[in-house]
Amino acid sequence: MEAKSSSLKKIRKAMEKSLDAKRFEHTLGVAYTAAALAMRYGCDIQKAQTAGMLHDCAKCMSNEKRLKICTKHNIAVNEIERRNPFLLHAKVGSYIAMQKYNIHDSDIINAILNHTTGRPDMSLLEKIVYVADYIEPGRKQAPNLGEIRRLAFADLDEALFRILKDTLLYLNQVDGETDPMTQKTYEFYKNYMETRNRTAGKSKRSGAI
Image (cartoon, rainbow, N blue to C red; front, side, top):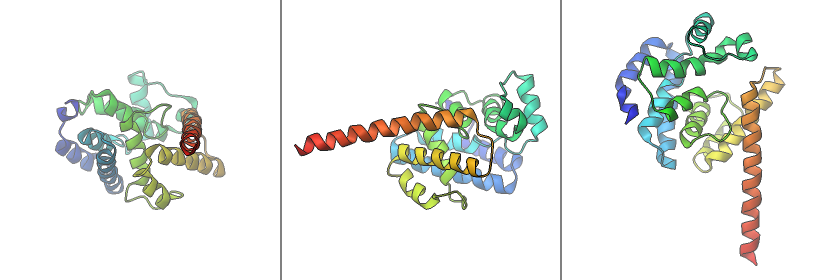
């Protein structure tokens, strides 16, 4: 399997060296939570751990270095990312996962790439890493955290949608810039959940007849 090309033990040691203590603790929490969610939803556990361990591998780089890597390797940078280069850690991280840690499983790479903004129609692994990043045990201040933690193990799509909704609400309240992909992802899952709930409602009504 692709994920075995760079062992988890080696990746863990590398993350301990390259991340500050707080970020490393967060990383361990995300890898642990991603593994638990993978068990719950029948996803590959090692892939979930690998993606969780590497999701923030570019987080402790300087903004200058992130921009330099993007320029050198033709990684697209939008205007919001150019004004807020810390947002590039997911794009740069996915590149580093491939080049430095020899990860070439596209699902793992996409989970790293999309863990901050999400994307429409995410894979199960992408959803798991996105949600794990929000609910890992070290998180303390995210809105509705207790409820979303419970929801994550009952209904992953509902938890994902709630995180997107709360994230956009928070960004609007603090006048933060919203990446267009986050808005697109929210709209996709808003429509998805509305359609799912309508279908479930129809099934209940027809079953009651």
